[in-house]
Image (cartoon, rainbow, N blue to C red; front, side, top):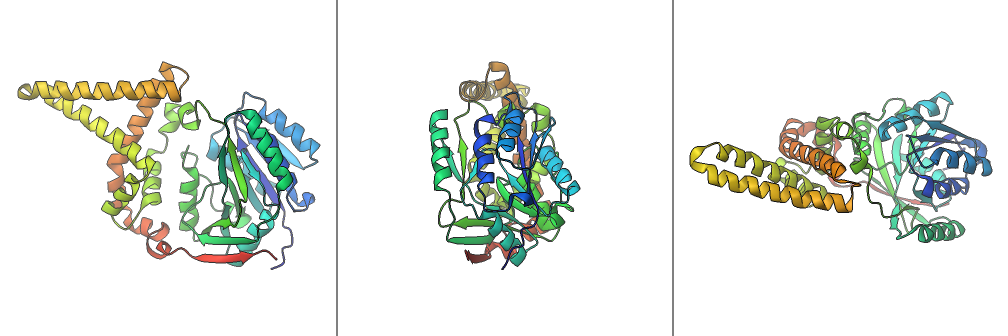
Length: 374
């Protein structure tokens, strides 16, 4: 199918991304797509490392049309800022790209548009290969080497899925006009967006190839967005986040869904926090029941030992200080316990919705299409 090069807003939401942003922007400039049909929109959510300045400098040097918007925001808020601006300037597609993703398939935009035209309107996500480097020099060396080797894949396979990440994703105008990101979803916003897209009657496709389409490059970090997020933001939209968890792991009924969840790291974390809270609750109940005080004291002691061990691990591995570790212990525990208790209830309450829009039912057998490069 012939592509007529529709106008595209390449949108990046970022915060403290100066290390990798340069390479991401360079990979955009290397795409086999007319530059006059592209505009790059960068939303800086409040960086302290000069990310916005890096974006302006690099985009000017690359001679790409661009806008850099600096506004304190979380990820879904930043994505909605991108959407509003893209619609204002009349973009026909939005191409979401993470600020640490290096595109290596130079024809990827053309191919994603072709898939949308053939099977859509739909959200089309291209897979990325994750790379973690021990230091900045290794990362820079890899990015420079990849830039010279960029080319095109020979075969793309597109499969229908219930949701996708937004690291390398194309969305047509007709969908973003109807479906926005829920700003309560301070994480897992892409999963919930997939649900909203499917609920609105559109499809979501994930694209893979015979060789990497893009690389997600990272350095080891002492902390991450979950650790740095405030308690208030982390616990925003708790019911929606629990619903999203049920949507991601739904497998036909409560038992199968819980079993599937517990096979994953996320499920094991939820189980850990739920059991720990149940130990504390049981210990307190027993402690105030005279015949069982010793048992209650034993359970409370066990709870304290578990918490201290976990607290020290958080402090050493992820957090800057003990106060941040305590804040994260609190928010992770509340989230894990809440989701663990609520998830079976949500699975029963919303069974019809989950079955219709998740992998269960018609999407247990994924629709697979093969798209060959012309």
